Amino acid sequence: MSISATPPIQPFAITFGADNATLEPQGQVLTRRMSDLEGLFADADAWARAVADGDPVVYTVVSSPVPEVPRELPQSITTIQPGLTAGEFWMTKGHQHPDPQGEIYLGLAGHGGLLLFDGERAEWLDMSPGVIGYIPPGWAHRSVNVGDEPYKFLAVYPGSAGHDYGWVLEHGMGLRARRAADSGDLDLVPFGTPAGRHRTGKP
Ligand code: 6PG
Ligand code: NI
View 1: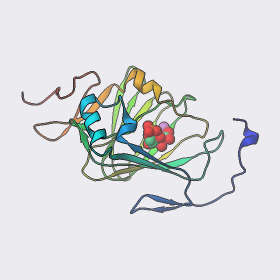
View 2: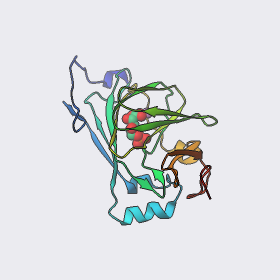
View 3: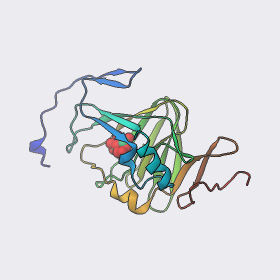
View 4: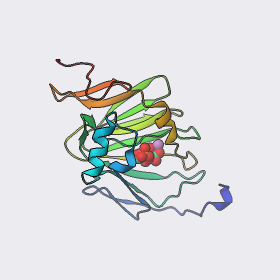
């Protein structure tokens, strides 16, 4: 998109409503249900049962009115509901930015994780209110709710970055975030681990 297509943005302030993660003024609101996450959970049968059983909302993304166009700096707040699908914590789809650029996340509420994968190395950042997670250019990223309450975070990213979801379907994310059956703790397992199998824990 050419720069001339960019609407003139005037300086403005946004009021953040902490209780419901609202923005005023507000832009687009995106709702991702379980059916939107096809091919992403390790246990495809459990995913299909969850879709058939009410197709719950897994996360929402509320954007500010700043458009996703070059040189602008859009922001959004993601709220991931707490939940498990066959032991795997509920999460975002995850994506690469086709135009590799950095991005920052700020934890607002709840307890989550930021999973990063560059195609070879995977990293996990614990996210809680007040923590800033930095996503370097070229690292695919996915957010995970590892707590019992909604996990909310603010994302700020360059408007030219774009979103590639096919990359994650093709390459995976390096790790999966599961709740250990014995301890209930977070268990990060290699991406190819069969559903229900645990790297650690008692047999
Ligand atoms: C972005 C941010 C972030 C992300 C949401 C939903 O680049 O816009 O990383 O706002 O889009 O958390 O995650 P998915 O885009 O992976 O569904
Ligand atoms: Ni992003």
